[in-house]
Image (cartoon, rainbow, N blue to C red; front, side):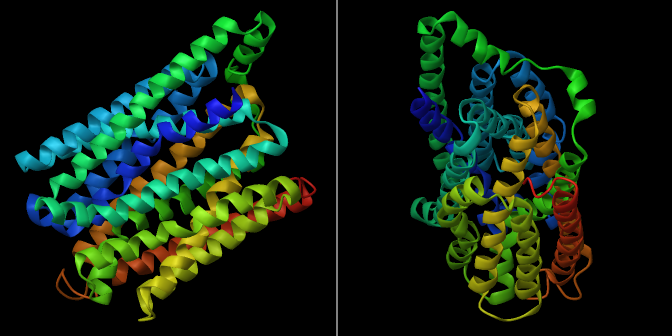
Length: 412
């Protein structure tokens, strides 16, 4: 049953992750087709993270109280419905309809990751936890990599940018179907399992609200880091394709493939890191390294003319090191009964950061550029902001490292 739970858990979010970055790959096209500004595009992107500023916490409370099956089914349905609405909006040329679709998608995508990590945290404790979460992150990055790389070719193949969004809908429908399989399997387990096993599974999901008041201080430091570093990661992934196009002179297809490289290193590094964390710990060391590589990548991409692949690969190293460090650390320091809520707060903090940074970057691009919008200098102020944001996240990660080293005896 553990293998079945792992496989289904990995696949139920593929649609969500595949859909996450199509908008970024098609940024220039969408701005032209819908006649919107960079600020409006930032609002379109942030509509997903905005609805998820509180939803993952509520979803975490729901999961802790009632289990994961119902939550996962509702989440995958909303993801599918949202992508259907987005696909239809491309035919209507409607910005408002696309925003509605993004909100529906956001309602589901914000919950599905918490569901995944709670399932894995419930089924796999101890030595196997880091490697299973590593496999989950790797699967999500493969889906994101394929999404960023294939959006432009699909749009070009059918001669219509909306085709890429219809491809998203098909993948999301498949994830929903897999979720139905998972739900049927869980019902069979509960029907056939001995009563003591069922009671043990249910007890893992009982939630005591008072536990939130007693979460460790280092947990809240990780939440602050999720706000800073997580917000920076997500927002950069929303604009990196257009950045490569404008600053380095690539066409849409090449820029999208270059941008997809920002997702490449987690595919290879995260499984190894999962084993490494299980064996040696050093999560806070890797978190500091993650913030350093993020800041370095922003400097290279924003203020040098070195081949953008160098900066994007360095960024992808940050994306490999950071999330696994944070998620496995939270899973270690929180009791099972509070895990869903703890991960929900973590996701909410990341979404708050993403919402703020998305809008700030859009405003800086519209009003902070020294020259006209469509130029190599369009992102000068935005990239300066990313560098400063990365420096802030480095300070927070360093504080977490010191607390772990001197207060927790390097437990993490």
